[in-house]
Image (cartoon, rainbow, N blue to C red; front, side):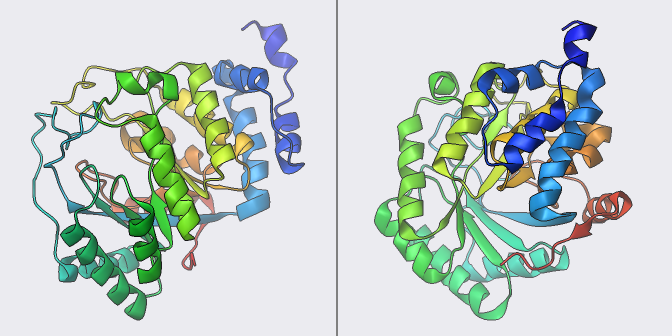
Length: 333
């Protein structure tokens, strides 16, 4: 992009469109992702205008509890828990109710408003579902927390049971573009994921769905994913950046840099202006020292560790938010 083209882009017009309920065009979205890095601060300023309109300077914290690790029959190339992975990870079957409830207590200690119960596998067995339902029921009776579960492919009946137990939100990421899907996983389809999101939404649970950036997708496909999530009306959108874990098929893939990751977050804010945009897995390794800037377009993050990889320390994240002059949102319900 030449300097004349750069100077002719008014990034604030993207914010004006978003605040007026208008969609930026795909050409405009591509201009953003392909923009010169000199434009980054202007892009983030425009995205912050939209973020501030809907969320002020509040930051929502989520905490993940990996309640079942490994033993997954799916072949997702990015995942250390998949059947293809040789990564050195801790493996265990479904935690019991007491252990899951104890995780909720830790979430509160970390000032997280949302407790995310995540289990590996294609979908929950009857026993696993019962254990999660029992834990959620107890948590809801004793703690003021929003509960998000992520248990894989879900039937309508399973979604209804989770809703009745008190689950507020269900996460099922699109992960990548429909046309790129078979390059990443073959044991289930993109349509399977859409169906689960539909089942969850029909049950009355708030849908949470996002993506993983940096798996060989094109910029145009990143844009399409953002529009797809807008059409699905996902209330919470976690944006993950590939962690190329040793022992996974994507371990040698290194496509990302911090400036591009920040542009992606801004893109999602413009396309899904009123939604919770959460900077998620991979922020530590892919955004690095620029992580604080991610909270200008994003309004949420995970605090603590992820499923099988380490996150920032809780104190570091709390300090980062304080240093920005932002504020942790303690009540997320």
